[in-house]
Structures are given as C-alpha cells and as structure tokens.
Length: 301
Ligand code: ATP
Ligand code: ZN
Image (cartoon, rainbow, N blue to C red; front, side, top):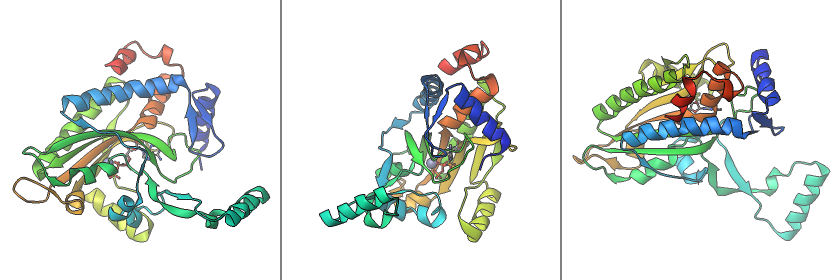
C-alpha cells in the first residue's frame, strides 16, 4: 500500500524515467541517471570505509539456506525471508508443471527447496568468515550487496530487492560501541554535506508477531539499534542508514573469539543505497544536472 504522497512521488520518478516499473511492487529497474547518483554515493561510503581500514569482501546475492536457519532469521523475520525453490522432479512431473503453468493453476508444490536463500542483509555472510581468533584490535569489513525482503509496497522507498552498503566491526565490546558512535557522526556529516535533513533516532527491527513487539520495544529501550532518518515521501522520515549492535549474538553463533579467549562482540551499519538516492532526488529535484552547485562535488568526494 502506498499513501497518496508516495504514489505521487512514484509517478513522478516514473515520469522522469528515473525508475522503470516491472509490474511487481518493489521490483523496478533504474535509469542510468538514477544509477549514476547511487554509484557516486556508494563511492563516498567506500572511501570512508577504506580510511577506516575496512577489508572489502564480495558475496553473491544468495547465502546458504543453513545460514538463514542458524542465525535465527526465520524466528524473528519469517515474513521477510525469501528462499530459492527449484524443480527436481521427473519428466512426467515436468509435463504436469508445464500444463499447470499454461492453465494458470498453482504449481509451487512441484518445486522443492534448494540449499540457497536470498541475502536478507548484506552483513550476514560475513560472520561465518570471522570464525576463529581475531587479531589484536579486531577486524573491520565492508560489503555491498543486493538484499531481499518480502515487503511488496507501492512506496518507492520500500523495495523487495535493494542494495545495502555495510561496514562491520568485530572486537572488544567497548571498541565496537565506540566505533559505532564514530560512524554515526561520520555518516551524519556525509549526508548533511549532501544537504539532506538527516537525524539519528533510536530504532527497532520489524520482528514478527506479538512477541516481536516486545522484542522491538526492548531493543529500542536498550539502544541496540539506531537509524539515520530523512524525509522522502512518508509522513514520518524514512530510515536511510541503520546501526546495529549485536553484542555476542554472532560471536557466539560463529565462535568468533578475542585474543584473550572471550567472545567477540559485533556491530554493523548499513546504508540503503536506493533510499539515499531517492532522498537526494526528493530533496534536490528530479534532474540531477540542476542540483545545487555544492551538492555535486560533495557526491564526487
Ligand atoms: P541486520 O544486519 O541486523 O539484519 P541491517 O541494519 O543490515 O540489520 P536494516 O536495518 O533492516 O538491516 O536495513 C538497513 C538499511 O537498509 C535501512 O536503513 C534502509 O536504508 C535499507 N532498507 C531496509 N529495508 C528496505 C527496503 N524494503 N527497501 C529499501 N531499502 C531498505
Ligand atoms: Zn548488518
């Protein structure tokens, strides 16, 4: 569902050929004008991560299904997860599949679950790579990837597949907490240099169900997650960057240890790249060539 304001923004973006709808809500193609802004912003984040000594890793947009199961993602966010299914049947079943497809009948039961799932957050595949003892001072890593969340919506800022640029830190609790605070300041400065009206707020994850509401309240109260929000096309400003402190969660799951043998803590921050790009078009107008003189060089770094 989209509000009239979101629908109007969506239609303007389509009218200016910045986004090209596919027919499925939250899955759209982007023009080169849109992509060029996204890539420039991405380059700014990459430069900050490089200055922070982050090691850059590259993953495909799928993870082992086992990873989704092991991290508890399906306990907290069963409604957002996407798993890949494929056909592994006989020739007779393949003809039945084809018949059903052309007759417009349901055919999902003729597919079986594979070993892969769509990446739900860019940082997920990083934690298994950290297994073992961290060097003195911990590790900082960086990833950019497509992420899937099953939340179809007419709001142009809510996609089913979108890119997240994340920086991840593993180390001692105090170091991880201080690192997250530094990145909050750094990220606010970056976004404000682009003349975005950016503010930090305490936040919570969209946990599923009634028990999820309590989890979300406690997460917010304890300050484990905060977000940078900017106006896009919703009544409330939209989150364009999230900062998560996982404490020992991933350290325990993947046996990530500090040199003294204790469990490492982790934190991550993730920029939603399509959202940042949409926020820039919303703020400065739909023709990037007409943006304020100060903003374009700031995008190029
Ligand atoms: P974790 O790693 O703990 O699962 P995360 O920080 O990686 O969490 P989120 O906080 O849920 O993940 O999302 C990070 C950023 O991704 C958000 O700040 C937002 O900018 C962007 N984002 C999230 N959902 C969507 C969506 N449906 N469409 C577009 N961008 C999104
Ligand atoms: Zn993350």
